[in-house]
Amino acid sequence: MRSMKRIFQLLTVIAILVIIPFGVNAQCKGFAKKICKVELSPYIHDGNYHAAILTIGEEAELYKTFYSETDYRISVCGTDDLPDIEFRIIDADRNVLYTNKSKNYSRIWDFRLEASQQLKILVKVPAGEGLPEDIMSGCVAIMFGFKEK
Amino acid sequence: MGKKIFRAIPVQLAALFLIAVLFSGCSSDKKKRAGENFGLDSTEISEDLLDDISQAKQIFYSLPSPLETAMLIKNAGATYNEELLNPISNASKYSTNRARALNLGIYTTDLSFASLFDQTQTSIDYMNAAKQMANGLGILDAIDNNTIERLEENINNRDVIMDIISETFMNSSSSLAETARPALASIVLVGGWIEGLYIATKLVGDAPIKDNKLVERIVDQKLSFDIVLKLLDDNKDNPDVAALINDINDLKKTYDKITITTSKITAVPDEGSNVTILKSQSQISITQDIFRELSEKVNVLRQNFIS
Image (cartoon, rainbow over all chains, first blue to last red; front, side, top):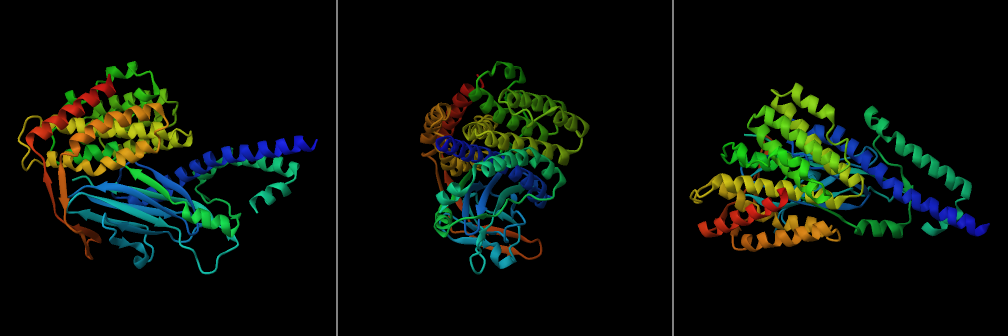
């Protein structure tokens, strides 16, 4: 009987681990579409979708080539249960070109490059003062828009 | 500590939790529509686990989407040539997931290209071809009949058309991710990227490459090459992706002959427009022969993808 219980427990855990990511992905897509994408307007969303479940203190990075003479907007946003999301734009020499920390954690940044470059976007869920016992997780989405000439 | 938590869970409670999770999964769509709560539940975890999580950095590699690729070609002064698009009559012959994924990317780039040049009927035709590829991949919701109807109803509204194209591409890639098929999602992106290169190189043809904006855009793709390879490398266990890496590496050999030198970037914010200008200069070095070699390799690769 005890071994049956163990098997059932194991199956339960496996089922949860399999099912949760799909629900999470769907939640993230809904959030990205309804909240983050709206922030791109009047820029045209490029159609790419980048989202991850992040926990306080966790980071994600994204590599993308941006092209010269093109107007871009980046939108980085997190679900309401997360603190304001910090993001930095970093060049190939690791110079920080922009951080939203000094802009009151603005969710968007508009920019244009004189020469095409591959840049890194570093996204972080900042840890608040005093580590809470309940560690929050939430969806963070990174989206890009451009302007047609 | 994690293990202790699992041991302490009574069987009945675990079963109830499983049922709750199943039902919450079913209702997540309703929550999305209501737009009430996209957040996830808080979870008690140990500090050790938190440290592990903090170190586990997630990395994304972003290629230009079909819409961005088409926009870059148009903004470089390209003209519209429908003969360069993959004929929609080919759609019925793609029967493998590899072919469908590649041509979902290809048809989406063609659709974006046609739409940016206000080719209304062609846009509808190519949206249908993309739909056929998506259906074949089992992502029926990505492009449905409602999408086609919306496109037809708004065919003279460029903003709505762009929005429909970007949304269908987002739906396709996220649906593949949700069904645990990131390898196919990466193949879609590479298909769209190569189609952009194909259209651009064909439009340049034998024209002189000096001071040619379109050639500059083609050369710029060298900056995305390592992103292509990393994106594919993440999914190299998939045999289709492994074969694609092999094909792409041949093109890389030619791109390696091209040099791009870029000066230090200085960020200059414009308080008036709120747009930051990233000031820098770059120099490219490519010969007519290297460009011809590049065009030929792209042509072969694209022919392989659409046949």
